[in-house]
Length: 186
Image (cartoon, rainbow, N blue to C red; front, side, top):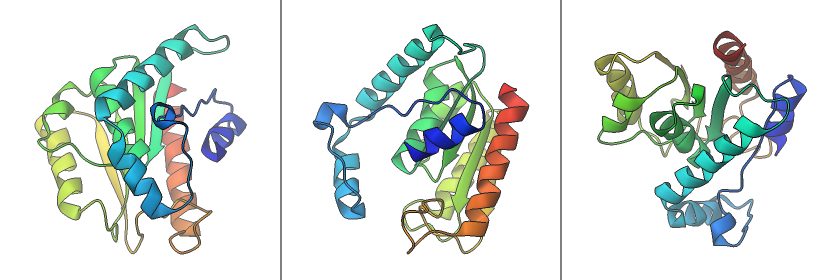
């Protein structure tokens, strides 16, 4: 919710769907428990819920349905990369350290520019994953940028986790993301 509030503070209409609602609205701050929850969520269910969220936003007052963007972190970053591959209403995507599809076939259907944020010392997403994304963007002639932060671990943007938070890198990633959305969404 904090991220949605940050976007709202920048003038965007923001919504943070509960992708775990199918699992009983479970919430945890423990990274290991979060990993278990993440692994129990089926991608098709998450995408179905996100598509429903997009459909809702397209009818919501104050929302320009031609200027919809998506962002997410970790698992949410995976969905932020996949959603514009299946939903043409998304006009910009800024995934933070999300899984890259393997094989890269879904990227062929990517319908929005991407700013992919990655910490070079990420223990979950590998450099090979990120290179595969960069190669797929080029291979399928898609607009995208991969921004890598040297020395930054997975979840470096998470200011509630002092063990991984990198303030300078997080600020730069936030500023880049806002500029990216301004460029592509207005």
